[in-house]
Image 1 (cartoon, helix red, strand yellow):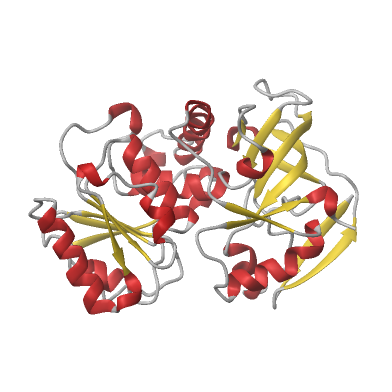
Image 2 (image 1 turned 45 degrees about the vertical axis):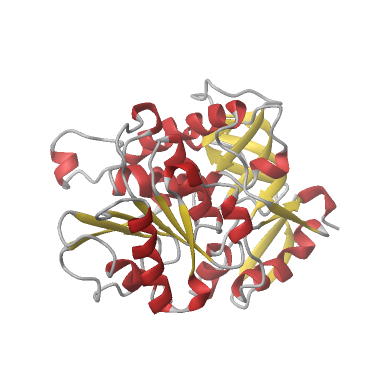
Amino acid sequence: MKEAIVAKGPKVTIHDVPVPKPNADQVLIKVIYSGSNPKDWKLPEMGNTHNSGDDIAGLVEAVGENVTEFKKGDRVAAFHQMAAPNGSFAEYAIAWDHTTFHLPTKTSFEEGATVPLAAMTSAIGMYLRLGLPEPWAATTTPIPLIVYGASGAVGAYAVKLARASNIHPIIAVAGKGQNFVESLIDRSKGDTIVDYRNGDDAVVSGMKDALKKAGVNEVRYAFDAISEHNSFMNISQVLAKQGSKITLVLPWGDFSAIPDYIKQEITMVGCVHMDIEAESSEGKAGIKTGAKDFGYVFFRLFSRGLQEGWLTAHPYEVVPGGLNGLETALSNLKNGVNSATKYVFKIEDTK
């Protein structure tokens, strides 16, 4: 099969390699479309040269002996384990069964390729890190929420999940993707958009004004889907001085300037592939799987949400040439060329 390897630059080379085989708890998927994310060029920049694709949409080719939910021919999407072999920039990819989910027939493979990593990142940030009410226990009282970077895939899915949980008012901070964000929020419940292109002072005052207009005295929760360029410092000037939480999506950032009264949480989507460490407080309490179970539940909820329509795919652009277009697309991601869209790749178009 064809497989693309991403190196620093980004530089992409395509190789002929054997089709992998799933282990007992894995699924082998014929990749119809692969999605892409900023980490697909960022990790290779750190020296990790590999097939960095993690968003899979395609057809089940084979399953391991312990897999019961899937069979050959099923339409699925999946989150590949980051930095592991056999990623989605290939004709066939491997995913664990608990991070694989059925795609409704109404959801195209192109759409499916936009969901796994970004939507799960948002779910982890919203519910595991900020501790907000899940969609099945939606709140009946106002819970103000700042989503910084709401036009990107992670921020947009955070807004969609917030609405599923009836969390309002949402203060969505965005730039040139505001028209898209407007389609996500609910103005009747006090949601609003603040333009970050007007500068830091304007962003801070804009968030404060939005809260006043919504009749809210304070905001305690923030999902920072940018986590750089002063985003978290702008948020820090608005969050309440007691009981506040912020979750950030860049584990290598320096967030020491955030005031001590704000609890910081790092959202790492890779936790859905990790076991609980035996010596941790959770491990000593007998908890074994932790975020793996969270991932299992929410990926299945995503399937239902796509079927019912309250969860929708992110806007996408199909890159010409399949994997032959990967290097240009990742360079565009690195240089901030695209806005409010995800690049997806039709694998069979690869020469």
